[in-house]
Every structure is written in structure tokens, then in C-alpha cells.
Image (cartoon, rainbow, N blue to C red; front, side, top):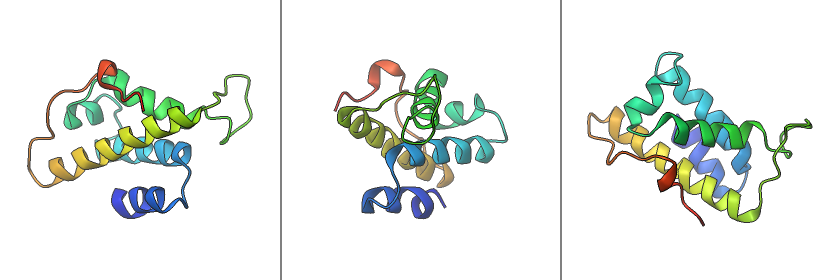
Length: 112
């Protein structure tokens, strides 16, 4: 489902990266049993790495108007897109019964 509803649309340009980030984080939390701690553990990423992806999507000023809104630069959007690709890749591996890969934390967040 993540590939069809998120990744394909993101790559096709029909789903903005901030919307994709929020949708994916919400989907992964439900997939993991309603716990944002469980999704990062299952995907072998830090809770801060996972939370950063969700927060950038949730607080994007292109998604909503708020005093806490973030303006994502083009570089932020490219980095966030790379993170989403990685999270979906890890989801596919875990669902296939495979190891998701090396542990990722915020120091592994892509810069471009």
C-alpha cells in the first residue's frame, strides 16, 4: 500500500513530499500497532529520525497555516524525499521477512 499510495505518486509528482511524509508516518504507526516507537524499531531507525520525517510533513506551511509551521526549502524537500524512499524500502524488506538494514539516526539524514 505504501508503494501505491505514497511512493509512486511522490515519484510522479502528484503527491507533494510534505503530504507524503505525513501520510507515510501515519501509515507506519498504524502498521506497527499504533505506537510511534514500534515503527522506528521495526524499521531499525531512531525514533528521532522517524519523528523528524513526520514533523517536517506535519508542520509544512504548504500543508497548513500555523504559527509553528515550517517552510521547507528545495533541499529540505529533496532530503525528505530521500528519507521517504528509504523508509518505504525498509518497510518492504521487513514485510518480506528480511533485515531492514543498518541502524539510521539523525546523523544519517541526507543533506541533499
